[in-house]
Length: 388
Image (cartoon, rainbow, N blue to C red; front, side, top):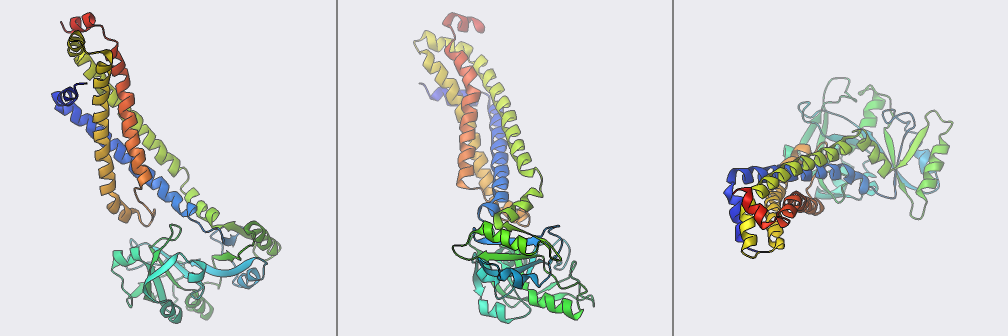
């Protein structure tokens, strides 16, 4: 097959070829980006620990539980450890500086979440400093935090009575070994929060958002959840125990049909670009009718005519696909930073890149199939008369 003709034919209409390729670039870029967002949304669910449960109010996640529940939960067979977890929701400097903050049992956090690995500072420094906090690498990079820095947080849910800020000290910086714990979170002593609530410095009743429960080795998580729920069936506050995966899934479900919408948009984009590419190849096939007739008159077979149009379509789409993949990968760092508070684990992974490349090839094959088949069925006399 005279492959030089493929390149010559593409260059014969440079603007049309460039615009078609650009449309494929945009389509592949969008598909890879949207799929990466969907994968990132599900990453926390997929990486959830199998031996960790979350106990929350049966009424709502926004209803707090009594502190006394912790000791009772720890007496349930199959429970190895509990850890308080309270969303804080403070403001650092100005409202736009939003990041997750949790008050936790400082002496249990690293046991409850072994995914947290300190890269600066020590466990002893964090646990021994009442105003100490741990921050993820993402926060450290974004705001320039270093061990020893002060982090003033203005309370919104838990404001101090005198209007001052909660003054925390960075005692450690961590990285996450799994995608269910992100690196844009601040953890500090629940004891500091509890002390303020009990003393009246913070005018909120002593309570906690959820309890994280570590299941003992060999214990059945489902059975442990049932026992915990039954324990408080007639208590002052009924609870609902879930696996960590289900708890994470609740947050994804808060986005409604966003993952489905993103996937639908990607599918719609690909279909639209398929029609545009198909139109381009149909035009190219019609323009080459006379040339194909001459080639067949010279002895080239139907397979050569079919291959020329298919090769042109595939080269056009694969070229655009490769550029689209490169653009998606190049934008990965910027999008990861911009989306880290909403989608903390955005990355364009190898599977997504492979999908993008496969879609590009499939697009080329499907768009070129009809004109290539028409070219292979052309009769020499009809082809020469077409533009004769």
